[in-house]
Amino acid sequence: MSDSIKGIYIHIPFCREICSYCDFIKVKYDFGYVDKYLDSLENEMNLYNIECHKIESIYIGGGTPSVLSLIELTKLFRIINTAKYPNLKEFTFEINIEDLNKDKLELLLNNNVNRLSIGIQSLNNDILNLLKRNYTYADIISGFELLKKYPFKRISCDFIININNQSMTDINEILSFINKYQIKHVSIYSLILEKGTLLYNNNYVIDEELFYENDINESLVTNMGFEHYEVSNYALQQEYSFHNLLYWHNEHYYGFGLAACGYLDNYRYYNTKSITKYLNQNYQKTYEYYNDNETLKNEIIMQFRLFNGINIKEINDKYSIDFTKYFRTAIIKNRKRLIIKNDFLYFSEEGKLFLNDLIIDFIMDIKE
Image (cartoon, rainbow, N blue to C red; front, side, top):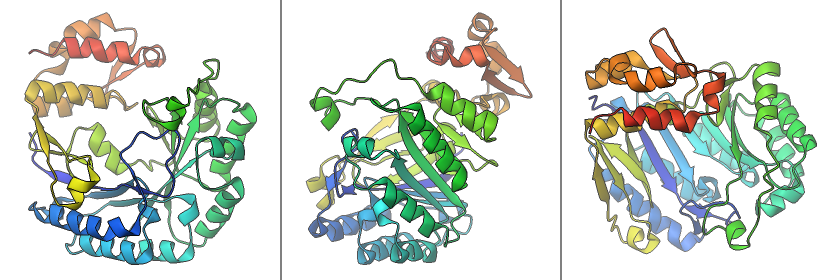
């Protein structure tokens, strides 16, 4: 197993508003909390002997990291940049539409952020209101016009589909927006009712007749040249999310912040979900150890999300197995749904429709 740790995830849990669909760990923004939170974050990071020369990706997510003031963001970057990361390939910062302003964009550039992740979710004002997003279509256009003046070449946008009253007109507007602003990475998620969210608590019912995945996929891939490289993600000109690829390849990474998760030396650890405990530097980490079989199981689950499939040689080298013999039963059972080519195993068009079944069959082949 490789002990190289290539990624750092930092969770900033604060939000102006709580979105109606979100079940992530988040806290309503209160400037009285933030300074103490950043102190605790710095202390937590100092508990680890981070080999900075191995770090290739830093991802600041939330919550809404961009809700922090300029002074608070300056402190956050001072904490991160105390060390140097000579081999850093990707530095991603999640930013909301309402925070796309001159001062914050310049601060991000000056601190070596080279990729922005923007959760737009919809261009329809009624849907934005339903989702409790704190901006309008006009704000989105204004923000992206401003962005054109800055040298952020790597921009990723998130959209949610299959929302009641969403129409094909809405989908086409999303596609036109992606094309107009030359977005090279897009994440498309279907609305899910998560327990405890506002939509769930208000007994919102999703119209099961809505299914825009095929329309989106056809347009992005066939008409616009995107690669559908992961179940929910599309990239143009190989502008993949390097950080997410670390997760999907089951690589080790540090996780810092409230409710953050990390993966080190085959231990997955979870920080406390209590903001009070975190502010008091009581991280209350819990640990789960994964043996080789459990790690292989996770690897199969994650790599099957990638449309170029499972890297057979990589799996053979990491786990000292012969992949095609080890998974012989699953491969034979699903031979019409799978393709093996150039040391990669991936699913056919038919296989895409049975992804969960395929994963279960492969997991069943893993020896206990």
